[in-house]
Each structure stands twice: as C-alpha cells, then as structure tokens.
View 1 (tube, rainbow, N blue to C red):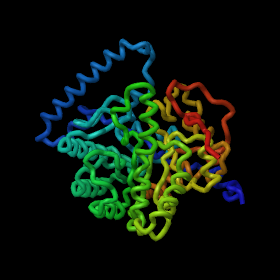
View 2 (cartoon, rainbow, N blue to C red):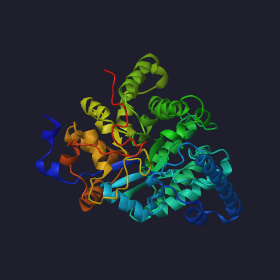
View 3 (cartoon, one colour):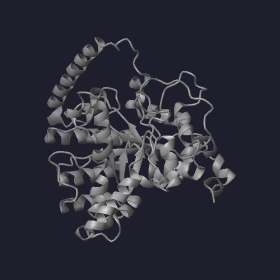
View 4 (cartoon, helix red, strand yellow):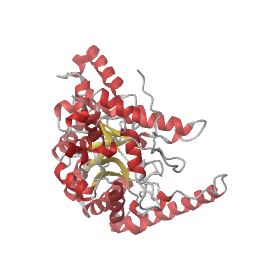
Length: 430
C-alpha cells in the first residue's frame, strides 16, 4: 500500500504538526541575562560584557573596511524573536510551526558570558558552569510563557558528571525538556564509554530528556582559516566529529542498558546514515564479543538515534522514505539563522519561505513519510505530547499534508547564504 493510500482524505487536509529540531535564541547579555547572574559574579560579568563590547566594536570596524561593507544587513539579525518569547511564538505561528528546539547562539551578536565566541566553547570551567546556569535560568523563564511551543535545551557542565546531573535535574524541574550534548571531541571530558557516565544516562532517561548535539559544537577554531577553511570546518564538525556519539553510545551498550534514552544529531547532511549503520555492524561482527551486545549496533541506532536534517534536500527526503528511515529524520528551520528557512516578508499575504522550502523538499515524498519527517519523528525524538501539539497545529492553521507534498510552481529569490531551497546538493550514492 502506498503512503498516500495509508492516510484518509481528512488526515491529508488537517493542519500538520510541524516540529523544528533546530532553532536558536540569543538572549542579550545586559538586558536579559544580567538579572540571572549570582551577586558574587556580577563584577566579573560586567567586565566580560565590556570585553565583548570592545571586541564587537573592533569587528564592526574591520567589517566596515571589507569589500562587502555596503551590503544591507540580513533582516533576521535584528528580530525580537531572538530574545522575546512572544515575538518568537508569533514568528512560529506565521510559519505554522507547532514547537521548536532552542539552542543558544542565534547570530545576533549576543554570546554567553565567559564562553568562546559563537561556537559556545568553554575554556574556563568554573566560569563556564556559572554561565550555563545563568543561561538555563533565563531559558526556563522564556519557555514558560507557552511551554508546549518550545523545547529548551539545558547546557550542562559536562566536564563534571555529578554537577551535570544536578543541573540536569534542576533544569528539568524548571521546564527544560532536553540536553545540549557535546560530541566526544571536547578536551578534558571523560569518554562516553566510561562506566562513570552511567548515572548520567540513567538520569536523562528517567527525566525523559533527549541528548541533542549541534554540528557546530564539534568545531575547532584551527579550522576557521586557510584555503577552504570554512568548508573543511563544516564538513568535519557537521560530519564525523558531530556523529561520533552515534557509535560511541550504540557500540558501548548505552542504549541497551537505557532503552529509553534518545540521541539527536542536528544539522546533518546526507549520505551517511545507511553506510554508518552497516559499518557498525561489520565491526560488530568482527569484534562482537568485546561489545557484549544482544543486538547488532545498527538496531540500537535505528531505535534510539535521530537525524536532525536542518537543510533537508529532496534527495535525502526521498532516500529516507525509500529505505525506511523517515522515522529517524527530524526537519529543522534553523530559525533565525540567515541560512535557515525563516525570512521576514514585507508582503503579509505572501506564502512563507518556510512553507515553500518544505514543499520543495517534500513535493516528491509520500504523505505518511512527509508527516514523519516534519513532525511525528520529532515528537518521538523529544518525547513530546502529540495531542497537545495537534491542538496547536489546528489553532495556528498549519499547512496540511496535501499542501506540504505539493511542489511549488516557482521559487522566489532569497538572500545570499540561505539554504532554504535544496540547501544540499541532493545527490546520494547508489
């Protein structure tokens, strides 16, 4: 039976639950985060704000001297949705998105205190732990405005397992729903196959908090320069480095011991999923006795790992449907990043770019598989309330599956750098 025949006419025409597995916020250091800073740290906080302001002004002067200085800034950079929950929700309503995952660093120039610029790398662990707690407290209040609409990610001091568990529990009680989970490439972190992590896995599973890795979290600064440095950095951080947790957790038995634990690898490009699962099983066949697993590693990955495909190409969407891993793919808008699908339009009657992007990706995909990748898989990946989100989709009049699987007649011009339309090459090896 084809995917289109599996759904009734009413299901095809009902508003679709759309879950973005990749979105961002950028709380302002002074106006938003300072009030959450412990009194003993205020002086250091203010000193860091002054330092960041100086660096920003210096960068602005350098940018003004570049050949591209005359370009108008991207309209997404100044959206109030970076830090204002009501504005953020209004933008989601206009896009038809029921809920979205929230990472920090939304490209508005506002970083965490004492944390490495842009990529969120922590170099001073004492100050990093304070910065994370400040941010988590702000984020919990941000998400509390309409809890169903946001999946707030708790940032944890993962260099200290006990402290991470304590902060995880506090964040869960405060309403955050998942964990910003660094890949196993961070210095001075205990390897994820070490038994000392067992209480952490158990707590995350108990609290229903998914582990979510963003591709940029695996980046190293030494890749940012030189010929093709950015391309190399994106290829390695978004690829092998970000994905390492897939085999570290699958092959070391973490998912076998904690079957309710979920891992989401965000901003993923195509062509690796099937090959990786096969390769894990090949290695497992040779070294299986060393792993002590009851099932092949691929089966744990298939049930516990999800692909955050923020720039989902038509090729990957069709491949996922053809090979049955659409139940592992989570679409993402990357709001409000300039490379994402959100773009403020002056014409209020124009079809949102996000809708056109979704139609461009899923126009050749069956409705059942499309429904998985735009929302149903996200509901499972983050342990969400499906009925609550269906009510949200109805209320905001989200696009129907019939609309989402209808290719657009034409695609409009969009700002340079956006990956809203077939952001990936769309080629898959046979």
